[in-house]
Length: 325
Image (tube, rainbow, N blue to C red; front, side, top):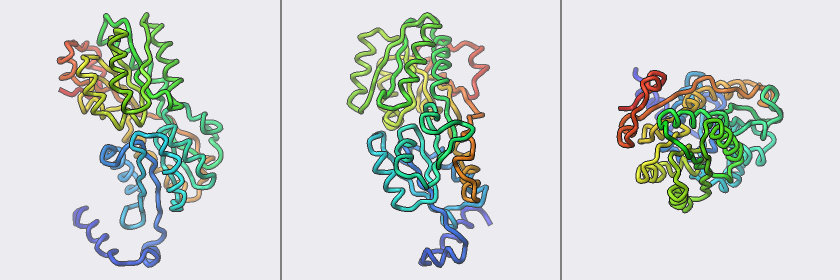
């Protein structure tokens, strides 16, 4: 029997069966809330990885698992209401991506277990990596630490680079440390650093006008829900202004960005499943250490490099985990 037939058979067997009856037949039905920055369709790779990890541990939607997905659609101010909604639904656990989502969930509940994939320093949210405390644990994405690496990559691709800008939402608590890291890394490479602060969709065009006025040669793009939500608009503006840019995740390069050096997010989401399983089996979140990423990836889009007139050094191509032709 193939997977599709099996799932169809399970779903068909449950049609019309009250939830309480299903629980008696199949055991407890777990409800997980996802507090995300972007709609599910844009987040498919990460969602698939989470589902695969849960399935490998015996948690299957339609059988013993319900996933409640809530997206702020790039507007961080929506997180508190969305977090409160998940609490009212009495979910068994909440998964968050990004510092604003993690803070909103922490403020909404002290009892429901929280798993965070935080962009900034998790110590702004938990007591420590080893002993996070309370109802929170998860993983860090090293967004601050990776900023310097992205600047180094752009400098390697554009040797005559003199002025680099960080495009980020400074309303995100994770962003100010990334700006400090940008300035430090730029100084170390003899570069001037500029800040392009974008806090709404309307700020995007103005930010690129500012980049032109300030003679910016290249960009480093921050990891933020607004930026994720308006990926296509930002890619188009980068292309229109022929600016080399280093991105915070693989999906930007797959969509036409030049280069990304980042945590492998599907791998992190897959790893979330082990946290979920431990907590559902009785572990206390605050006693589970916050984990650090183990899988990083360097992606280069050669088609974009050619359009920008950039010859990617062979040494860089050899280091790349994936090269998009």
